[in-house]
Image (tube, rainbow over all chains, first blue to last red):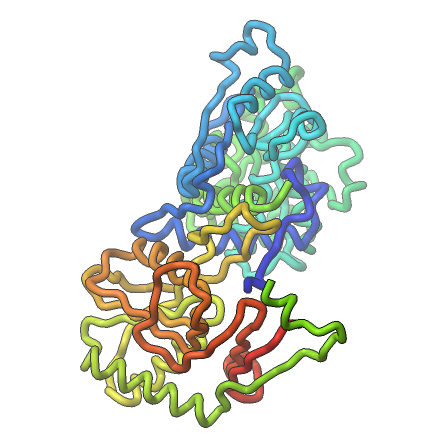
Length: 312
Length: 193
């Protein structure tokens, strides 16, 4: 009766690296449908009403967590929240024990953020629930990359052949890595730009070009995705001062206006206004930062829907 | 069970029987439009909602015909029922959604839901659920091109029916529309042996 069935090639969403371009296209199509849903007067559909989801956050988050929570609520899922700071993790419980205890309460899916690279991959091997990686250390942040690429796709109509510059702290950024995977899979050209100390040594082996001059990067690209300087992850000094960083790598409205072309300005948040982006640039007509946030809920609804609906 | 009786030991080629050809279908659509006009007069308080994915072609045809007959604009929307289906997680793969395009509120309106084939009634149930997100309609009616009798899982009946067909569950009704890229508007009954 229903010929129109489709599912992702993976039972979990651990990263962009191990999903296919077809998966991304399916997520985009489903995202567009959910975007229509969340713009209705009644923004809720009953799809996941018999699904229970645990949001397990071992690291701080505002946007991602709110976005996941809202996506779950819009899909009528039951959800429980867990933050490491006020939990038994502080008493010495292991990750696997914590998650198994949560799962013993009959939870179907786990959305997890963890400071350690590969934590969700480890869990996927040891537990039965479906797992969505909401950021693992400096490794991947797949839903952020999906919402970023979806936002570009929505704005420019396609990703194939589009030039995207990722500017800033590439070394500590899971957003950068996931974005690079997603953009290359969808046929975009990718450049990374930042001070040499904040670019991983072998980044060009991923198939991206490297640029140290932010002005040249802006002249080259159709889309500039500006990343935050992740001071909390920097154990040593990678540049003399924030003031110097913003002088050389900060993007302001004057710089954008001088380009004399249409450019799409993105930022995954949280913005450090005055460091990587000035206020007049972040709030300019080039910016699609708030569209990204809106798309974030729709993308997460799509991922939850597609993973929850597929047989294990 | 029934199938076991019907299927002979020799595999038979797929049987295809024409239920409505292009001319008959046109006559049927005209009749459905006249029936709608009888009940809705000038369509001032009425909106049409075609059900995705296949009901939208029929909805567009009816919408066009009605516009020519009464010379007035009638709101037409497309409603996708995917996220309201009752079989989520009961199949191996989730159903793929289609676009919902409802640019008007249905609060207090008379809604005519339009689909090509009425079979188990589950799609219509999901559609009524999906529809409520756009307001509380004064009245809801159902128009279908083909009503497959004796196959209902739910207490749902159509108000306007193009053609009643007696079918068994293993059969399939195939609606071919010009708008879907077919050569003619035609409806077939197919035996899946």
